Length: 348
Image (spheres, rainbow, N blue to C red):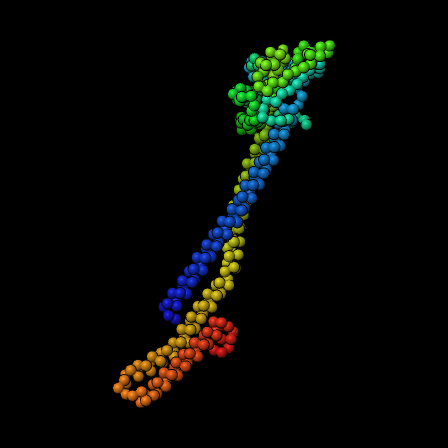
């Protein structure tokens, strides 16, 4: 086998290996990318569903009726300090069988957040905040989290809302490892309502979110804060992210192996073609080597006797003719082997 043929064969082998590597990397990146997009999409879809669910729960909590009686009680028991207000709520809860009564006053609510509005879940509570800074707990939240955390959460929410402008979207606050979703709305009632006075039943709702506007109308108004614990949803999303991450790593490993197998199988015909090419080159080298060597020897003999006539060296020219014919015959057989391997083998 000639050096050039050997070099060509080795080059083809290296090219095939390079092609296999490129195809494997490209297919692996593509399939892993698709898997990653699918997993991220799954997580995002779950996050959106949970966010909408938590928002719906929050709006249900916010939409629970704050009756005029609740509002009047809250105004009576409001305290400038959140912790004192929570203590008052605990004391109220401790009273057994006390009827707060039903108040006949007209009542209305106005949206105080960038949100529109079942039963109140156990992991939620509400707080009323008045224009003078007084705070009253409509629900104690004592079965939700600790006393200190409740006070901290409410104080932080009041500060955030004070700087939030007329409308605020739902807010998320974290305290002691818990995550809370909260929002607000305004509740107002007329404390001097009388059935004989129709005008006393009219309540004007202001879009400004300023509680003093209601006070100027002689109404009792409070900004009601609704809090919902969304820690389980946050934890679930974290675990889902972990599970999807592990699944993504494992899936990518499997996809890489599968892509390698597929690429290897797809390149089998190419490898077989290169093998036939190498076989042809080796066979061609052996088939043509003998007649060419004989032709070269006869030519050397002819040159060595250059003083003689052509007629006197007929045996050399005859041998050269036979070598040329044999060389042509073997070349034809090699061409047959290239075009039709089975036919070429039968003639060989």
